Image 1: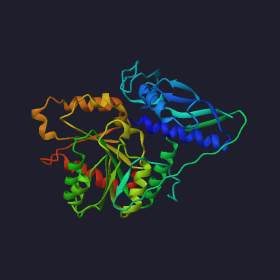
Image 2 (image 1 turned 120 degrees about the vertical axis):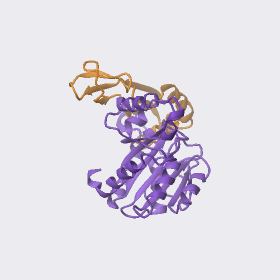
Image 3 (image 1 turned 45 degrees about the vertical axis):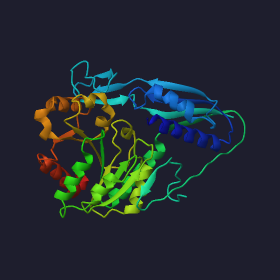
Image 4 (image 1 turned 90 degrees about the vertical axis):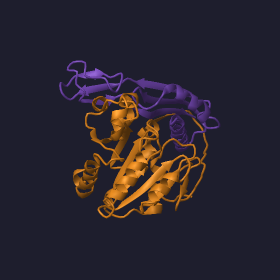
Amino acid sequence: MHELSIVMSIVDIAQQQAAEANATIIEEIEMDIGCLSTIEINAFEFAWSQGVKQTLLEHAIKKINRIKGKANCSDCDTVFALENMYDACPVCGGHLINITEGKELRVKSLVVC
Amino acid sequence: MCATCGCDSNGHVTMHEPGHHHEHNDDHSHQHKKIVDVEQDVLHENNLLAQRNRGYFDAKNILALNLVSSPGSGKTSLLERTLTDMKGELEFAVIEGDQQTTNDADRIHATGTKVVQINTGKGCHLDAHMVMHAVQGMKPKENSVLFIENVGNLVCPAMFDLGEKERVVIISVTEGDDKPLKYPDMFYSSTLCIINKTDLLPYVPFDIEKVKANAKKINHKLEIIEVSCTNGEGLQQWYGWLKLKVLLPEMA
């Protein structure tokens, strides 16, 4: 259940950024969460509902961009969509792959006032 | 209050042996609607502290290893055996992470090795901040090996860089051979996989070739060493790996 730690880190980042912008209200927060990141989205939603209470994010609109997994094959250079981390290259069947997208876990932007 | 890292609250983490506690809150105010481009990794704070730890370890040529696994794979037994067998050959220090008790630290202490126990309270993983303070308290020697035994959990610790040089995932043959597929993040982020309890292979339906193939599907760079802490099989290979990493740090 590391999702709560993650939510608390997001709260810290958002509140710090709001403070630097001299803002007292966060209206919206946009985040990138890759499909291959270690975030279980249901657990994240639950952690969010509890973790943002009495913080500047309590009433903020939450936008999450789910970024799909993508990899390239070291053997045959194919770039392909990766649904599971154990997927093989669809062209050569190899596992010498490098994940290029889908591990994101970042706060993208805030709308504050 | 922590002067070095500007740390924020860490719940109910406690350090046994030198360590300290701190808390602070910050809240500020003001007006006018605008968009703030943040573009910050959520784990940014942890990663900064991890890099700080890494710099400290590099400067002192300390080989910091983050040992991760499910509960009961034999992390502590592997350490006990290693610390006993390699006594006099290499200098060691250990950080033990568990939710509760000092049982593991007591076991390590009994081998005559310097050890700090971190109790995470309800926390399911160690983070760079906890390790930083544990290291400040224990001051591991130069050219030593620092084992950081993480909380037994194959999920959460995968996300948290502690500043280690290498991450070592341990799996025992009493677990399922599909574990790397079920818990890919840990195998993806590790550099060495130790398969423990190989003396039990005749009694369990564990296909060792299958687990290796599964682990390689997740991480083709993963090194694999098979050991038994009970009959000593394979341990020389593990000790050789350790010695190589300490003696040739620039190649590690």
